Length: 199
Image (cartoon, rainbow, N blue to C red; front, side):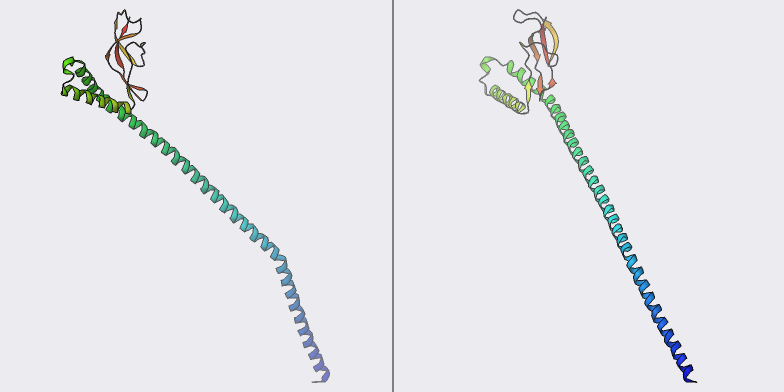
């Protein structure tokens, strides 16, 4: 092989190497440019994704907070309703017991009213009187009050007129006689007074 051919071959190989080197550099530049161009887009996409996740998380938090507030409000309403029902049941129970005790008080009063003057110092009568007073004191603590009747104007909210009478002492429409004592419990009537009203 001649020197000329060897030189030509060497030159060709050098050109090939040079071409390959240039192509590698171009590819590297293109890749770098592509990477540089894509990086901002990827960053924006990541930021958007992050914001979306934050928004969804906040929505979930708000939803759960709203749910908790509603449940607390429902529980508060339930508690108030339960307390009201309990108070109503207590009132009904107390009224029922008081209604059963009233006839016993009536019997005490009748028994004490028929006691003769000379028997009032009798220990048995004194004991009855003390029990009656104790019973009335306890009823008073429970806000059970007798309804005023004799000498009062007739009031259908408190009195039940079962007869009319003539009277020089009282005017028409005034109660002249109480036949059965009435009682109130916390401003509501448990038993109306049975009375005779002046005609």
